[in-house]
Image (cartoon, rainbow, N blue to C red; front, side, top):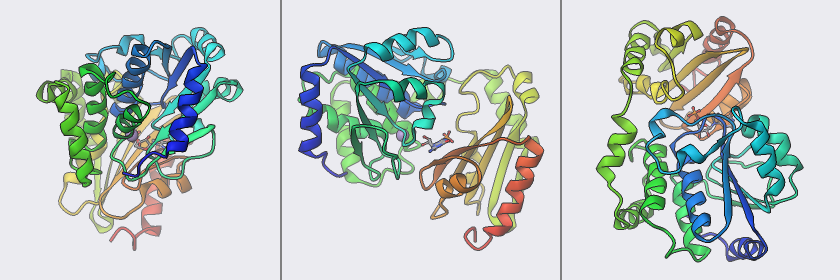
Length: 339
Ligand code: 5GP
Ligand code: MN
């Protein structure tokens, strides 16, 4: 991890002196790092005496419902009018765990219009310039790991408590796939050791996040692995597609398909995996890879998305059949890189 520049920290500290209201935002289709970032920063600044609101474009997955403060997160899709108000009141806005303002979806225009000071804290490559201050470190496991250092550097070592440490740990745990990737820096383990020192219950957190699924989600997973996974050994690729009908059949709730995209990668030899989910008017896509195939560039070029080298998302605005046809045809084009 790079150290956060003192110039940046001082700019934020200076602004905090004349700040009353803070707004904390994260990305569409929030993951553990997004939720952990929102909840830890909300509690951190609330304890410092600020009026803090946290908002997301869409709802957080049900398996984060156990986290303290999750019910207070404002969800734009549900209550746009309240969010309009908090944008107007904010003196300082933190944008966490994304690199492109389009990931704010319908909140983007409110964000653009706001005159508040904007601070981005993130670990995705190539952040666009949409904030006054950027704290970006691609080498770090997760935004939560970076936030831990940020909190300490704004003078909050004493403010961090078990709840904040728990939320930060959730982000690190989920963004490293339980320390299976993005986690080769010894510093990550030192920070995790410090977080455990705040009294967090690591085993209980693991159970909450990973052993907390509904029967429907398990059955949907069984169905798609058996019936909807295509394996293309010549391109070391496998992918899964899921229609709206299938989601309905298994009483889908947000978060149910989380992690599905990783399953094909556990097949021997597979280094590129994709998950296609039919939505109203578009197909939402997740990409994962092992090794050096850059799924972020692939997604940016062909599927209106981006992300990290080995984990990215995107969208297709044609139907599922056309989307899969395009995907299959692209594999041929990338056959050398996929060897
Ligand atoms: P997921 O497949 O879990 O939705 O996303 C994987 C990674 O790619 C996450 O780090 C996420 O923030 C990023 N990502 C997902 N969708 C997009 C997108 O449309 N644009 C960009 N720039 N990043 C994305
Ligand atoms: Mn992240």
